[in-house]
Amino acid sequence: MIIKNITLCDASGSRVCDVELDGGVIVKIADDLAGSNTLDGSGKFLIPRLVDLSISPLDGVLNAKNILSLCDEAKSGGVGHLLINATTSPMIDNEVVLEFAQNATSSSDEVRVDLMFNTLREDLTLSNNAILTKRGAKPFMSTVTKNDQAIRIAQYSQMHKNTLFCKAEDNSLISSGVMLEGDVSTRLGLAGIPELSEVLHVSRMIEIAREFEISLVFKSIASPRSIELITKAKKEGVKVACEVSLHHLLHSDEACLGFDTTAKLNPPLASKQSVLKLQEALKQKEIDLLTTLHQPSSPINKETSFNEASYGCESLSFAMSLYYTMLVKSGILSLSDLLKLTVDAPLRSLGEEPKPLMEGSKNLMIFDPSFEFSIDDNRSLYCGKKLFGEVRFI
Image (cartoon, rainbow, N blue to C red; front, side, top):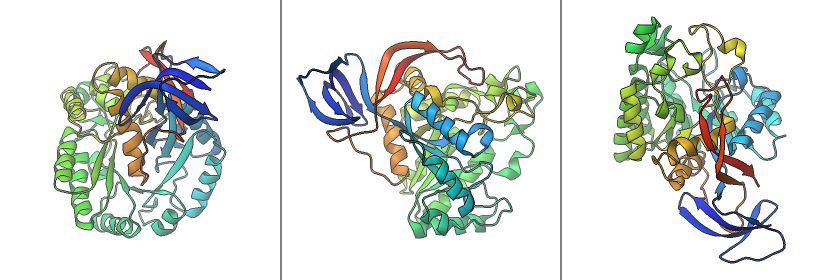
């Protein structure tokens, strides 16, 4: 199949050309290809499938049905590579659960699924990091409160030369909090989570990463102060990276007004002033990775009181359209910059070197930005929003 006049785009830039595809693989790129089976790609993009490193299954339950459902949603949203969070039930902290989950992911053809294990068991003892890493799981830094545990985990990471993914929050400061501590939580009469919970943990882990010279990715950061600390550390040579969710770039804690449980996220949505700072950090290239932070919940766990509702909202099945509409079409990022944050940087965090689109490239999608649709999902922060873009895996 030959696609004429399509825009080939990756993290390095874009150009309009003709592309010949065979079995989903680019076999030729030129300016004037001819053949019997041709399509007009004018106005459309040929781009790599996205990578998302912060995905949770329905209600956090890790089973084959939920993993396959994630793969279907990912394909609809243009995401070709998922990393499932460690905070699942059952939690991946031993070889038995890991093998079970790996068997469930093997039936997915078009979406690659990687698994993250928790470096601490539920009883707060260390998991067998060496065996789990050897068997292909990605290490995840649990929200530990003890420095000696954090140091031992860092030593494992140093030994195996792998990236440590860290969810920055100090559980001792969260207590019964359900949203950001501030004016909005006070107005709603809800217990708040102080911003300091994240910032303190970021500060400590930066120093541990500096000491042991390990690579560290902070997952779903919500505080501008945390980004300031991470940016400073990067300039000082510490190998740290910052992931932020699209939700935290677009929505403030005011979305919780009216006790709207779709806005109950983990980490909690930041203040309106902080959202503006997060957007500025994105423009200044201080944010390294983006995520949809997909955390789906059953209605029974969402349609309840704010205090009792589960954390998270849905976004995976329209990920590419959401990114494009909110960040590219709005002028905040170029499409190439978006792909740096959603393809190249996540792959590097997993220890893989991304490649530019060229002859031999696969795992591609066609994206048509002229297509318009509205989101009809009352468990999404974007319900009723008009989005642009249609995804087609090839």
